[in-house]
Amino acid sequence: MTFRAASKEMTNSAPIWRSHLSDSSPCTDGVSENGRDSDDELLEAARNSDGRAFAELCRRHTDSIQKRIFRMLRNREDTEDVLQEAICKAFVHLQCFRGTCMFSVWLTRIAINSALMLMRKRRLRPEISYDQRADQDQVGPTWEFPDRSPNPEQIYVKREAIERMSVAINR
Image 1 (cartoon, rainbow, N blue to C red):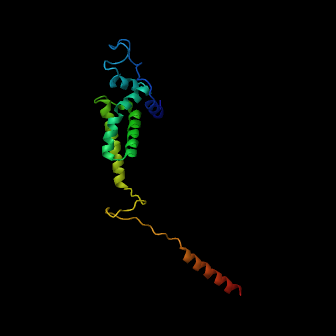
Image 2: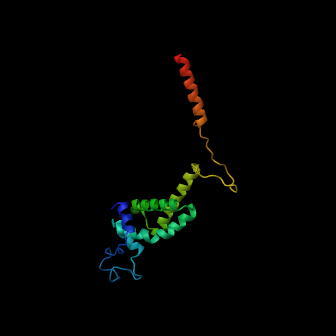
Image 3: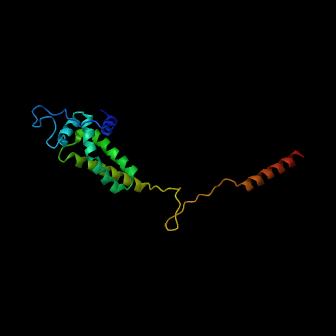
C-alpha cells in the first residue's frame, strides 16, 4: 500500500483495525482491555502491510506531534508539511523500526528532525517578503524597487524626437 492510500485511510472515519489478533488472544473480540488495539498490535499489523493499522497509529499520535512541531516552527503550513513528511518517512522506513522505544517516540523524533532540517534550510536561505512594507514602529529595511520603465513624459519626449528626426530625414 502506498503512503497516499494510507493517508487517505487515515482521514476516513473507518473503524479501528482489529482483524490482526489471533484466536488465542486474551481479548475476546480482538480489542484490548481499554477498548482499542494497542500500539504494539497495530505496529505489527502495519509491518505486515496493513495500511489501516499504520493510519490508526499515526492518527493517535498526530495531535501531540503537531503541537510540538508548531512550537518549534510557529507556522501552521510548515507544521503540516513537516508532519506529512515525517509520516511519509515513518511509513517508508517502518521495517527499520527496532522497537527499542515506543512508536510515538520514534515518530516524534522523525518529525523533530524534519523540523530542524527545515529550520536549517531557512537559515541558509532566509526568505524576505518584498511585498511587506515596514511600519513606523518596525525596525528594518523597506524594500522599495524603482520602476525603471519610462514615465509618460519620457515616452512623449522620445516619440517627439523620433518624429522630428523622421521629418528632417525625409526633406
